Image (cartoon, rainbow, N blue to C red; front, side, top):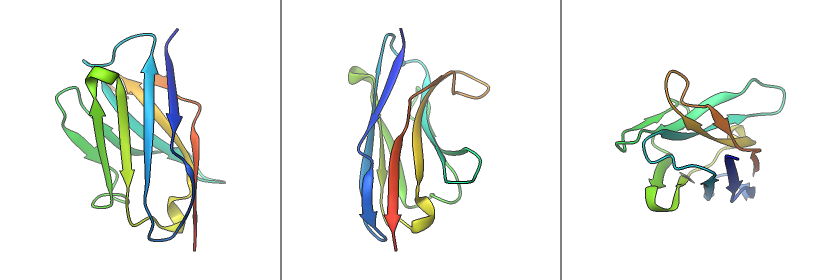
Length: 117
């Protein structure tokens, strides 16, 4: 059974940093994309970042320059370094993995990030 388990969420002040981790089990994703999406209260889920199997990275405009996605293929893990956090970054962050077109065949249960002003 494939599982994606996120960790690292929490409460942080505006301008602060957090590092999210997502550990995958049940199959290897070394040849697949892994990424992050988020859902803020009262809003629809949205794409945040993705890293391809080659290491190419993609970001939503709202987080470009502040967030950095990386992965450790040997550990089947993906990370999201979040810097200069803003209150509007408050959301449940979900780890995703898979192939085209959505690169999100698998989802984690999410981790809550709260940014206070």
